[in-house]
Image (cartoon, rainbow, N blue to C red):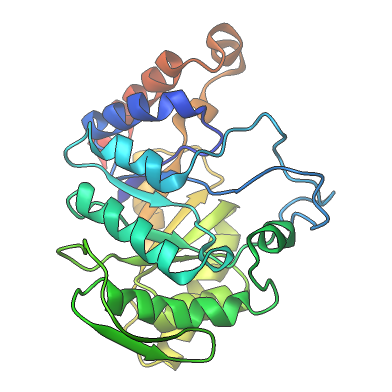
Length: 293
């Protein structure tokens, strides 16, 4: 079992210190989320009964790739992944250049958590078609893989059409794709062309069981081995070594946690949102959980 730090809703100036602590404490990957802007969205947030997102205009959404570049510069082992980056809201070559540069600067410590997104408002403002986003991502992923191999690439598809060209720099090793989302389309995409699946909310153990069963069924349908992809998710259980081993036996390869959310009410009230408090909870989590699993 590996441990990913879920650092969404973190203030921008805390990421570098959290990355240093993650590197030291034994976390495998640090994740951060992606939104382009906040507005009075016309789109309904799909993970809330009210349809309202759990953030407001004051919530920080720093650029994923700039932030990963800064964190990579002060760490040695830690990997980084967006959870998740809405690639179809951008053009193909912007995505290709940003991810490949981050991968090179981090010495291949980038995993590409990617999804289709829910916020139509962001697509409208970036000039991308919201309604074809799934099909465009299906075409985008293999094209990105080819571009990141280096050398000349030519592609003529439904959404992307270009003659011979190349980009540089390109990573020394393949960038793994972790497909986000738990719709049937997302799970099928992960099973068909993903290197992993990453959950983008907190799952009960029963919900996780259902997702793993679906992924295994789709993997078999597409002729891939049951263990062909990584499975990463946050689970609504207070972690302990026995629970982590049980989840690993079920097929979870990495669990995601933000240890400061596990602190007591009294601790949180006393220390607030300080980076020092967050790091203290990470150190405690590393001692009590990571070192014992």
